[in-house]
Image (cartoon, rainbow, N blue to C red; front, side, top):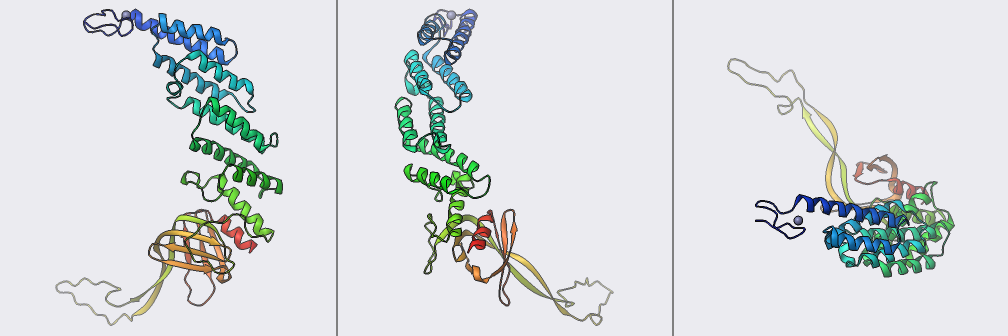
Length: 363
Ligand SMILES: [Zn+2]
């Protein structure tokens, strides 16, 4: 005999639940989620929600996990429909909810629903800073206040702050470079929150935040100021040289010329068969040059205010801007033509070259 997992009474030989109990359980979850949704829409007061939670537990076989799952699901739904600016009522809603549900915070947050909600609110407060509606200190104060109810790790906070910075970047760079007031906002944000525009975690490579960093550097170069940001690079810099940017995982190709002696035996192949003789008398050998690009391996490409420096595992090369006579940009790299006799073309592949083109234009 199996016992019913809902009511605990005998449920028959091969059964773990009565059909009626199963249905009642499903019905209870539906009632609970209905009450949660209506609570978020301000149609059900907290006391009412609390009663429904109790009822679901006592009469509809809803376990703690069931209630936590439904709550977390409804928090996600709510988080998806609310938009900044966020107000005290939003935070109060969360406080009321947590006091009604009387299940541990970590259980409700098992899938990260409360973390996501909190991060969304943080981004909203920062959006108010970037749009000029709040001072940064005020946005931070409110964030701290919200995090007293919904605590986040340092990493989760940074993720939210970086995401907002990326969005601000996207807006600020729509029309080219940032305006001085936008630049000031970005600088204050980055320094106050302890973020970086150029030494970014790998997940943010290629994001709008990188463009903000590049844009800041370019506006400094344009104004003839030393760049406000520079990178730590394991390269030896000359006097007055600053490392501006680093691209990782760049492949270098170098033009190679292959000389072949066409007309020789190695150039043409003859099949020597029985009864057939061959003569070489009709051919006169001559050298033929073919050029091709040889893969020189992966490395890091550094952009300084004076040179492009490629540091590869096997080969490294430094190209001063003064030696560059042309650049062919590609969607994922560039070809560099250098001045001088017998210099080979170089191709760097695996990055967006627009920043380098701008640097060369400004220097
Ligand atoms: Zn039962």
